[in-house]
Length: 260
Image (tube, rainbow, N blue to C red):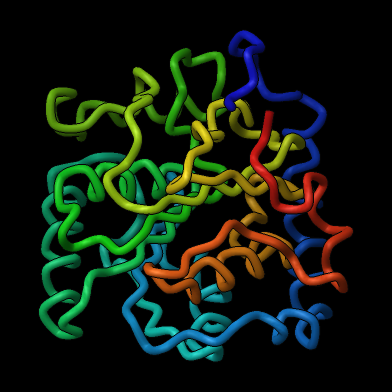
């Protein structure tokens, strides 16, 4: 279950250390290559990666390359910098989903980083027949207060570019379960958003995986990257909750179990 603590601001200390931690985590990603190859292989089904706020496809390049190496068909979103829910991005995402499902003949798995994860969950609700599963990385999809994000001010500064809230809004903390399987990867040492806003209600089709790292480094943090690959390799009829291999188990505080 989601923790009952009230909404709170992310730690200022963790925010100050976001840059150095993310840099170090990229070095760890390179060094962890042999261990990361332990992840189960994919079967060529399409995966669409959605970058976080104010980032672009460069931010998911390392993760896409890793997933492709494992046999997944990982794709960038090709929508430039994520400026929030602009009309171009909202329409472009729907076209991108249609393109990938048409080309592959199968639904698409969505991997969203931070705000990209909110877009992924939005797509799953509105086009469930086109979405196989959703994996979020530090995505505050249950955010209810601007104090829970250190980028709320920057987001608001771009609000004049965004679609009407009736079409998409980050606020409100939607609690209804998704119509597809979902995995929320989060870190309690997140310096950008309140980690409690990134955790879902655990169920037979929704799970939470805790890792230890920065917000900005989640797309290349070895423990998060391995969990993404493991979840993508699951088959719908035999889906099981995440259990890391013994060699990597020390990287997961709850050994892959749901938070709470």
